[in-house]
Image 1 (cartoon, one colour):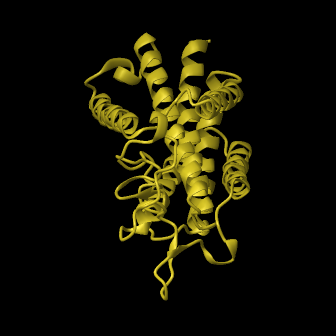
Image 2 (cartoon, one colour):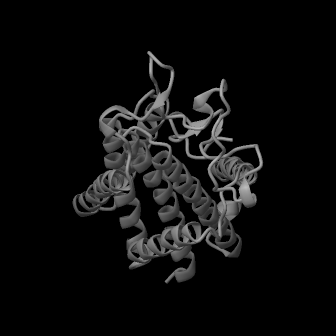
Length: 290
């Protein structure tokens, strides 16, 4: 089972069509985080480390040359760049674009470009920083216009949504580090099933609303049902984050190339944007029509 995040499903963060670090063989003490036993002589050395490079003379797996491996500092710095780009673009869009039909059209266009760039990067063999930063910039424009729109009707909603996103993501990271959430293959399968079902139902609901088949937005209304659906969406965002954390942890453990830190930053940014947008809706629902 691969990561729910399309970014991680394309490169280096999985092995044997599954999560790096997951093993079907029993592990010592039943600990799913324990390292797998060393592969017996004659077996494939890459079954344990998908990032090791083959020595052409002796056939032994080796770490990337020059110690050019991904570290947590790399992930943090790249994530700071992508999130910083999102924030700067959002502030500029909020400041320079007044709420109007023109800005709404620009926001929709920016969201579409960001989606296209994300899909292109997802199918690239290697991370392309220009694509990732471009995605962050266009996503930031979209978020800036949408946030300004919400702020016009629900004063302070974007600021509260940012705080809520930080709190939720921080709590998710804490729960993951404490091993309260164990990212196993079964956990990923169940979570992905729920996430895919949620997206499909949301798309159907959007079509129904567009053709006048549901009043007040249907499942995405601003009433109690909409609130419940929003909470579920945030929980799915937290699920995405736990998969991201696991993929990053495994990438560092198994010596992923340093360039993969861009991919990690890309995935984290996508998950945090998801949570922020859902948090923005929840804040608006809680404030009501004031």
